[in-house]
Length: 169
Image (tube, rainbow, N blue to C red):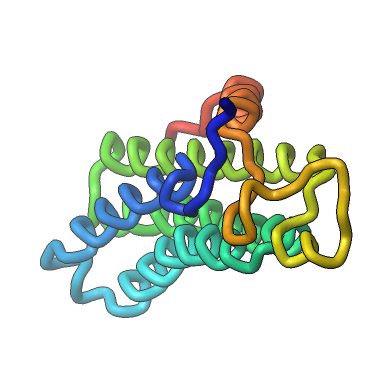
C-alpha cells in the first residue's frame, strides 16, 4: 500500500524549514544581532513565512492554492539567504555559519520546487474538489491529500540533484 502524506508536518520541506527557523532564532538571540531590530525582525519574519506558507497551502486543500503558497515559501527562502549575507557583512555570524544556513535555505527551496513540480504533474486537484469533481485520482479520505510519499521523494531528490550547489562566498 502506498504511503500518503496526510499532514504538512510530514513534508521534508516543512521539517527542514522548522530547523532553519530554530537556527535563525538562535542566531538572532546573540547580543549584537539581537540589537539590530530591523534585520533581526525581518529575517525572523522571512523564516517564519517558509513553514507558515507550506502549512497554510497544504491546509487549503486545493492544488493550485497549495502551489501558490509554496511559491511564497520558496521566495522566503531566497529572502532568508539574502538577509544572511547582510548579517554576515555586519559580523553577526562568520562565513562558515552563514554558508551552512544559506545551504539549508537553498536545500529547502529545492525541496519546495520538487513538491511544486510533483503537484503540477498530478491530476489530483485537492480534497475541496472531491465531492464536486470525480477525477481518476480520489483522495484517501475527505481530510487527506493524495500526495504519494514515494513519488514525492523522487521529485525532491531530482530537484536537489539538479539544483547545483548554492554560492559560497
